Length: 99
Image (cartoon, rainbow, N blue to C red; front, side, top):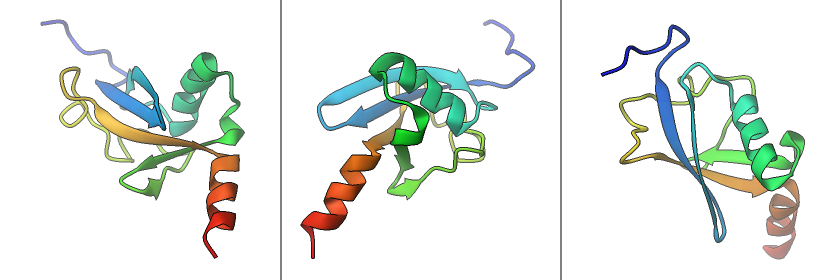
């Protein structure tokens, strides 16, 4: 068993958008914006184009993952927590396809 880093405990996340799934790990103390930067490194989409959701609730960029309910108890390597990713144009299309 390795000691945890002073900055916080690790959380394991499964980020999904349509047919794309990304597995990521971060610290509980990381912000949602930092998570968006991880996604940017993989999908090449800037944070301002990304919308991240937990249980259909939009995540605030300034909050930590811990503040959003992602802790090492609920976001484990063998059972990562689900985060839904949408891009701004997805939300725009949804708004205009349902009158």
